[in-house]
Structure formats: C-alpha cells, structure tokens
Amino acid sequence: MKYIVNILALTFLVALVFGIITFKKTDNFQSFKDKIGQPVDYIRRGSEALKHNVLFDFSDRKGKSISMVKEESALMSLAPKLFRNFSRPDWDNFWAVIYKPVKEKKGDFGLKRYRTKDEIRERFIELYGNTFLSFGSDDWGYFWDIVLGENG
Image (cartoon, rainbow, N blue to C red; front, side, top):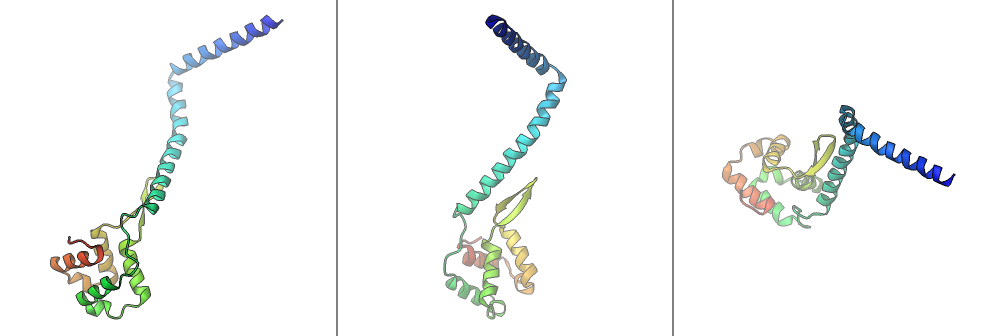
C-alpha cells in the first residue's frame, strides 16, 4: 500500500510537470502570462512612484533658507511696486511657487518634482501680471540670482 501511494504521487507529479510544459508551449500561456503580468507591472510602477516621492521628500536638492529676509529685501529693490506691500502670507505664497514641489501625473501615479524656471516665470506672470511681464532678460537674470542663488 505504501508503494502504491508513492507511485500515484510520483505519477501525479510527472503528469503535472508534463502538463505545465505542454501548456507553456501553447498560445494560451502568453495570454495567461500577460494577464498575470499586468497587476505585477502596476504594483511595480506604483512602488517605484512611492519610492521616488519618499526619496524626493528626504532629499535636500532645492530648499529655501530659514530666513529669506535678505532675498525679500533684494526683491523689494528689484520690483518695489509689487513687493513693498507684501504681507507674510504673500511672501509664503511667493516662495511656495519656487520651492514647493508639484505632483506631475505619470500614467496612473503622481511623481513629485520642482517647477522649471519657465513654469515659475509663467506662474508669476499669471499671479502678478504686469510686473513680471515687463522683466527683460537682465531682470530675470537678477531675479534668478536672488531667489535661486544662480544667474540664469
């Protein structure tokens, strides 16, 4: 009896392996593989997006200094009509355009990134209108030097 059970189990195992090998050679296997691969790929892309956003939050690539008084006074001399009457919330909103990350939709997931200079320029023109519309290339160079610490 003991040998019969072992022989039956071994026969079942051989039949199972043979069935898997035969199934793998059929067109149904590719369809099955694609169906299984979709959720796995979705989970992989989701985990990569999560990893990117977490690492982005911990990286210190672009951060404003604790006190922006020096930069704010330089901006007041650049465009006094605009910045003279700025309150603390106005300054916070201004700096948020530059330093706060935005989430960009990539497929099903959002990835954090900083705005580009062109996006910052467009946003300031949208928010503050004529002051930034009248900026020439020298004004923008001075502006970037003040807010980002670079001339560009």
